Amino acid sequence: MVTIESIRKRAYVDGWSIRRISREMGLSRQAIRKALLSSAEPRYTRKKPPRHPVMDPFREVISGWIKADGTAPPKQRHTAHRMYTRLVEEHGFTGGESIVRRYVRLLRDKRQEAFLPLSEDWGQQAQVDCFPAVAVIAGNQNHNPRVRYADAGQPGGVRLGIPDGEVGGIH
View (cartoon, one colour):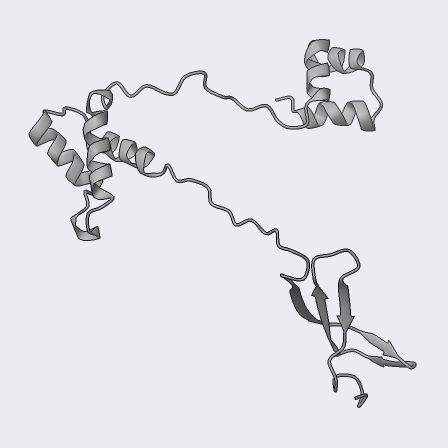
């Protein structure tokens, strides 16, 4: 299988022309140009969402159960197995349990992405880290001082320091 990486390597590293790549790899020049212009592997995207012919008539019933479970105590919520047995008993469902499990998983996994904005005024936030380093102070080499790094989040705000008592008796 031809990958975009191999086309880009032959064009940019080996210096091959589009016509030569096309001839050697058996692809059209238009496909080669498209591969050179793109920065990532192409992905398949569906034009329509997949159909669920067995589950579609019961979609509202299952969605209602899941919404009602949102306010119910954890021990009283429906499992996928319980939803399957209720569908068979109450609604005459003829499909398999695995189909119900898969469909319930699709409905329950619709979580929203959460993020925390990290923009504060200058001096409101700082990052501090300590790490071992090798220091040469006054010609003496010390392999074990603990360096303290602090960043106040502003240009020129980085500070490096060695805690007192860490370097050869210097206080």
